[in-house]
Image 1 (cartoon, rainbow, N blue to C red):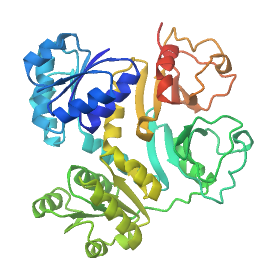
Image 2: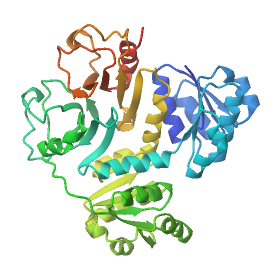
Image 3: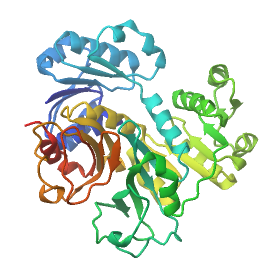
Image 4: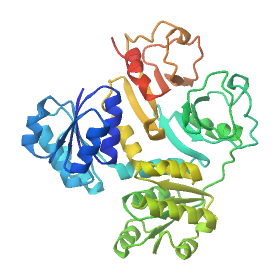
Length: 443
């Protein structure tokens, strides 16, 4: 597939790195010379320095042959103009990254079904809300119209699951461990894998039995009554609206007077305080010492980390920390500062789904792209049909977490045989994705 990417910032770079691994034909257009040089050093792709809305640049690089055009710079007008230009010059589809939600009413976006808007801040706010609704989890992703869920969670030290092979453990019916983060290594577990106290798990199961699964890991769910948000930008405002709709008390701390007024106008049910989320007095005034969650959602990674540390010290039960630069991932993991959340991973997961075959219903990235979760629909002539799972030569770096058949969902065993129309949720390392797509494709 031929893919154009306009913008080589954090999101553009991450998408590019994922697509290069999968063997796609990429053209990246970026104005900034330093970013161009960085890409040329790190990735084996064609990088063009220039303006992605320039029709001469687009034509010179074969835009008429593009299957997909991604406009993912940090500037809404640039993204919109470059995507419109690409579509007019022949790109089959264009995805436009937009920060301002008022673009939902832009007639230019409504007239073309192959011009697809994407609102990262809204996606991130929805991701945080999902976390808040499952206390104790550090990642929550729903699949199969919400019937299946993938959780990222750490077991309590007294849960009684450590030092035993997985094949000897009995958890709630319909759940399976699909991945284990052990230090810097991501492991696809097998029956003889023994759990260790420092492990963090990925598990797939039925949404309705989340409380039973969390209880089996010794994680006690407590009702969420109060959330404090540091930062009243697009993510903070959107999240405040979503939380208010769940009848949860919300306090928003915002430094800028103009933006604080905007938050108060858009979310009148929220308590809005003008000040810095890195100020202990403002945090206390906002009630962070009694908060169930503190969400650090400013544009500054440094401020987010410092504010979350303060909130934890003052008594916040849980923290969610947004980080925009990958350099902070290991810092957050080392200090175990609540739930680190990367907006660019949320965006990249949505974007990458559009690159894959039609059998891929959804795709999400985990661990900075070190792992992927893919939802496949089994077509009529797929290679996975007519043979039991244990004879399919499934990649060792992949595991089928669950299957949905009609109204039924279950964890398959080695004797399970796929049927046409089944939906399979597969947890995989990136290098196995191409093989999986071939196995699940309509030959």
